Image (tube, rainbow, N blue to C red; front, side, top):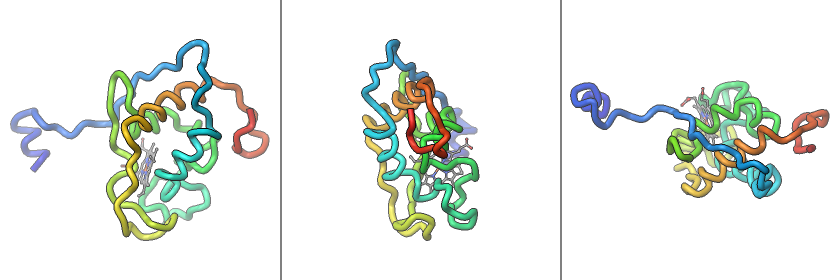
Length: 146
Ligand code: HEC
């Protein structure tokens, strides 16, 4: 129905993932870090499906190479994360985490997903914008090691 209205009226078209246009201030305020924000955000909302320990069959359709259980995994697809989940001056993206989630990582979709607040989505976009510019040493395999 939404798509029919969308085509007939060109109104109510489902939005598509759009870059939020979030820019990290210069100098980097360094307020949001992997340790104080990113890691817990991903654990609360994303690694139910996007975790490198989950087999393909356990991911509820989440694409491979989109694993958010490490900072390295996040920084491999920062634009995708911003476009799916971030809020910023140019877009408000609510595509992830979707509506139904597993109650144990990799399990069946048996509950409503916990949803990030709008403030958390803004913080996510800002954190990603800043974190991608910070120096990293991933010799430990992706655990935060500036
Ligand atoms: C219930 C399982 C599930 C959870 C939880 C989940 N995702 Fe996803 N994710 C998917 C599925 C399924 C797809 C592929 C279909 C799609 O793109 O809508 C996907 C695709 C993606 C993509 C790739 C889109 C592209 O460009 O190809 C990104 C980025 C993403 N998710 C980010 C996130 C983030 C960030 C979170 C946490 C806020 C999250 N996901 C939580 C299931 C999940």
